[in-house]
Length: 164
Length: 197
Ligand code: SF4
Image 1 (cartoon, rainbow over the protein chains, first blue to last red):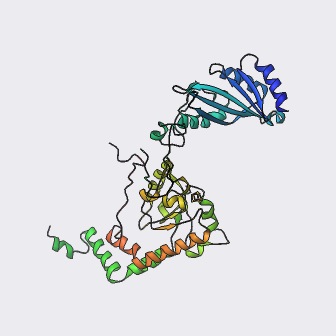
Image 2 (cartoon, each protein chain N blue to C red):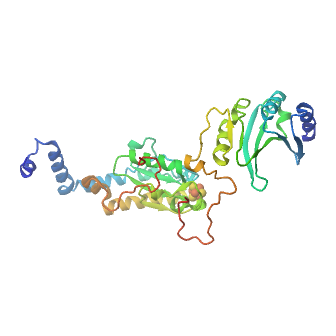
Image 3 (spheres, helix red, strand yellow):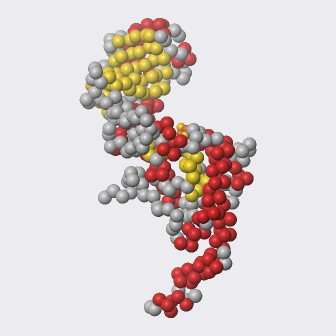
């Protein structure tokens, strides 16, 4: 299936639920509101998208938003698996809360935990929302947001090895 | 009880008897030399794969380089091993596992830090999530490189063997009960949340 065909299919299937469906360089992106993410995910699952490949987030400090992106794909239908489909949600940066999609796609569980610890996005209804890779003290500091600055030196000399 | 009288009793007080026997065997009879010799040829590293240097660690024990010829055999259980090769970057969560593994090993025990990451951070020198291994456990031999070739790992094992033989590390550790040539390392960061009130 060509990305353009998938775009038409999605526009037809999602109707007014999606805020915006775009295609660029073979990447199809469905942008939805935080309220309608679960219905849209259910619709996508009915279409045949049966697993989440990755969950990631992007920080936009100037626009004061965090965009959480689910890349979904299909094991059973090969034609759906060819284009890359991203399901994106824009969240406010100071209080990013959204519904968890673990009820729809179980494979997003660990990846939502990673987004939680690195960006501080809280997923409502997640079965086990704990930091996965970081210690809890570090997870509180939201280390992959753009305002967390890692110290850099041009000349390597006696690096202070604790960043408090 | 009079201490001098106790000193002469060989059978009655088991602790005193054990100490006297140990001093005799290890000190006068040069059993210490035998212990050092035996330790150098049975350095068994525990498998603690922390990062990508582990690939070279595996290659070191492959048929081509065959580090087993130095008497070193990677083993799974920390309680039956006597040295650790830290294979690369140590993250904060892994530092706790490293310390627990080190504590579980019986002494005399030794540590080799492998790779630029284990020396001073390497690629990740300013990362928020790594610790220097020498802050967590006492390191005996460092191997530079990213990653170090298998020959360098074999060389480090030979260096460690020479160090044990020349400084009598293993036997003096057993006789005196502590490591005489260095202070014990207590992690500056509370890696495992052990000494928090
Ligand atoms: S020294 Fe290089 S190969 Fe070894 S753990 Fe660090 S980055 Fe990986």
